Amino acid sequence: MSTRAVPPPPPSRRSRLSPRRLYGEGPLHSVLLAATFCLAGYAGVRLLDGDTAGVLLWFAGSAVLHDMVLLPVYAGADRALRAALGPRTALVNFVRVPAFLSVLLLLIWFPLIARRTERRYEAAAGTTPDVYLGNWLLITGVLFALSALWLLVRALRSRAGRRSDTKVRSSAPH
Image: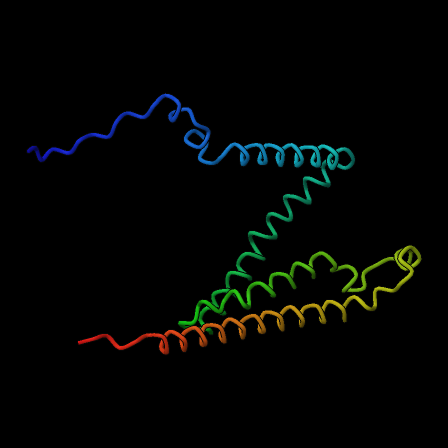
């Protein structure tokens, strides 16, 4: 009997040329990625049709603002949250998700929340921007309350699961 390892059989020609082997993902992924690039290209062409220099300046400014200001702020906030929670790092997402959604809503609706609108907004919308700050705070509170409720449900399920595990187990014969 030989102790040498037997080399694996060479891959067939078909398996060498499979999309997953060449690309790393299935063909649907590559089609969707190509469609996304086409859509982004179309949006870029439409966007740059007017004030090209202004749009490019806005993109460069937003990239610098994100990398130099926002990234250190939310990385520091995440580090502080992890330090405050200590060994219970599984709880981080119960704060991250509602905070992310709240900040996203703030960024989207900032001009209305900060009441930085023109008079024509009130004429077009038929309402004043006075309600947006209260609504955003209410939505933020509801998001955190739902997250806390979900955490409570998970904790109760986990506790009930542990309790039933100890009741079901019979003592092992010695």
